[in-house]
Length: 318
Image (cartoon, rainbow, N blue to C red; front, side, top):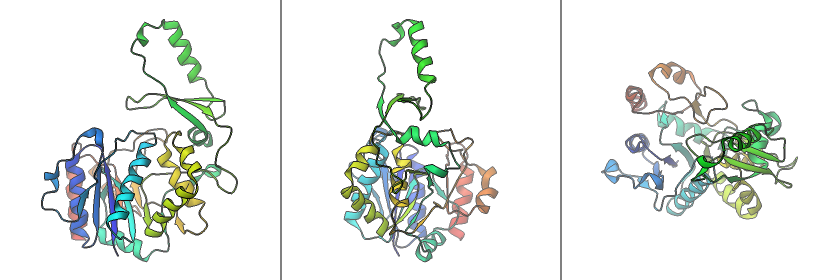
């Protein structure tokens, strides 16, 4: 069995290269593809010198958190992967993921399991991880990025205060307008409730994590669905965080696919409203060992390099 691994990275290139090298050392048939965000500059090929079966994706895209670009990047990478190799399974990882069990055990799980897709997903009607209004606010509105005014500081204070107060009082996912403040210095979003959405009782909106594992059959189904239903991708292009709903909605409404709603990842969140999970350290090793997962995220070699050393040693020892 052959697994194609895609690593999506935007910083910490040494850590992403370490992950790629570990995977190909651990799996004699695996191929690793690395997409390094175009805005971060070219990837240093010397980090992969001498490594076989690792490919840096050509013509990388610029990726911005929360908009359509992460979906565009993944589809760009999948198109390249499908054109250069045959594979049985596809796994998407971030550059800050790391295996917490041997790669061979992960691949055996994929080979012997009954599912076509392992993806964490929840329906809008029963999502224990967040409020229904939160999901509605993301995927039932058409969003525009608000411009940053160069001379915004010259606007009278009372006007700015009144404007921000009005935006903050908009009911989440219930009014005609919706305002989303974004972290990481990104421009805020102003949304208008759509009169028509692709969701129906037979095609429910789903939401979940954007790190998953797909059989070749499931990958082909994704491209076939998007070709048959361009209105779905057009809808998601102007939503907030489409990468956390598009795939889930397609797969969990697919009657011919066997979907296991578990992405086989260990991730810790301090709050459902935070934009990024907790950075894992050696203090989390016991929890990782007990988790029914094969990869964990996120790690940062600048925060705790020792945890990566210990996990890599454990993965290679088996």
